[in-house]
Image (cartoon, rainbow, N blue to C red):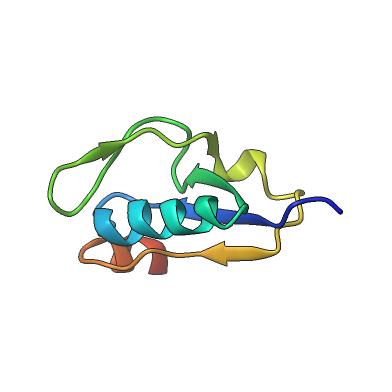
Length: 83
């Protein structure tokens, strides 16, 4: 049986705790987590100025099926995701 997969979409201003802790807990449970940058694969600056480099750009995984999609909150990250 193949492992479950999750896509965690990172946008500038995301709450870093929601992004990092969520990915950590899922990985401990055997889920393969992919960080995808909303605006590309370059570094994302989170709400408290922590910088996370995504694994991939969102546009590069749009044709991939994931078991879960996670959108970390935080301000202004939520507004960035909303467009």
